[in-house]
Image (cartoon, rainbow, N blue to C red):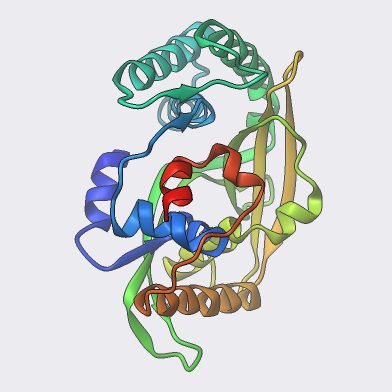
Length: 279
């Protein structure tokens, strides 16, 4: 199933994603602009199309490993990356804000190529540590329940980058990321994204409802000499219960029209900064 098909499937019912929950908890006003009013962005950061293009290339690599047991050539991954990036930039109707590590189109391509080279060199190690690639870009939904165990009208939805079985035959959910800075172990442990993915896996019986879920961030760093870093964490049934509680509180706040701006480090990349100032 393609990402487009998965999104269309999600839109057939009342769904909320972790991205929406994250957006609301960090800035309810941005959530309103983006998800309630559906405003087009005023500008986008190069980080969005760049990250999406890297994800597309990595998806090609894992799909080839899963379906054919072969390693795609580095050239094929780089071609996929460049095509995806160029299409996104070409069709962008708003200004794209470039950054220090990716100062222009040429610099973004050079950085992406170097990062994919690091990823490609790590494939033999990845294969050695994986018993089975269960799914690539896996779309899942799950009913949200109240604290009293009653089903709500909403479903949690998400698309998991990668689900594998490790050498011990245990399920591991992997999220591929690009980043300039290293991720602290505490950041991984506190990530609501992985708790949401754990919730989806348990609800869809990839693991037993009470079992812990192994989670792994696979991060490609945007450095002069790029490198790959792994952050591992675990989510328990109690973590999932708490996540459902948070999700329901967010839904209640949205339904009650709770809207206000929240200043943070993310404001510099916000796609709605002009609208925010005029609010």
